[in-house]
Image (cartoon, rainbow, N blue to C red):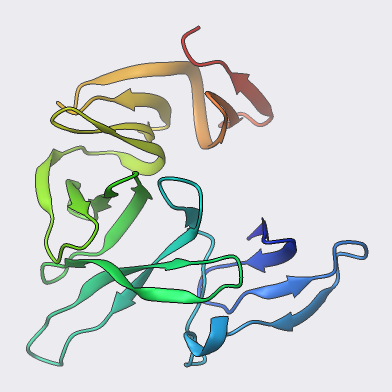
Length: 206
């Protein structure tokens, strides 16, 4: 679970559940939000993977769109949300191969970087219905940041429990000597949860 402060409102997010509005003083939950009717089914969720889009002006979320039985056609769709939680139409769509799921993703100013359960890394541009697979990285569990770069995208990510920078050629450079379980960007730096417990501030470039 995590708290999201957006458009002067506080929300509690968790996987597979509608977001709860939270009273900022008592921290008590007030009501569920269906995001203007987008979350129609009981198990529809606005999960903790929600992120600000690449330019920081809107929230962005990935939604699973199930294909037809025995035929397939599963895909991931992305939508933007404005300050009133009004959803845009689908801004990008990534078809999923049979038996493959989305593992982690992050927005860039022009699109999205996606890592699938088969370890493939795909760059998807906004407005497109197909992505460009650029390679595979085993052990990549979470993308912290993604930026457009010549030849593709540059990532800050957790790979095999280590915080690393991944270039557009998929070369990796360690950013921390600590074994980490999670990392949160703080401007150009990172606040990481270490595998042995405790929080460590990792400064970019040091």
